[in-house]
Length: 97
Image (cartoon, rainbow, N blue to C red; front, side):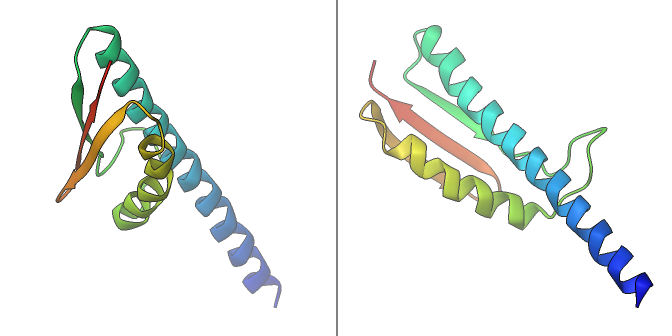
């Protein structure tokens, strides 16, 4: 019984660490948009990494689902014209300055 509880706690910690990685990936996506906009560009491409060195491994499909949910925030911005996903892992974001 105790062993099952410990396994459950460990799995929850792993999930939390994975979510932190997903959040950092989304923050990097937002930073890429901001940097390109500051440089006068009106679009950018962002590749979702399949892994990150020195980070916990994560299920790539779960990461894509998380980013898809968060991308709604970007789509709701009035300056964003287009957000497209190209398999397996590339987002194309276009905006109007």
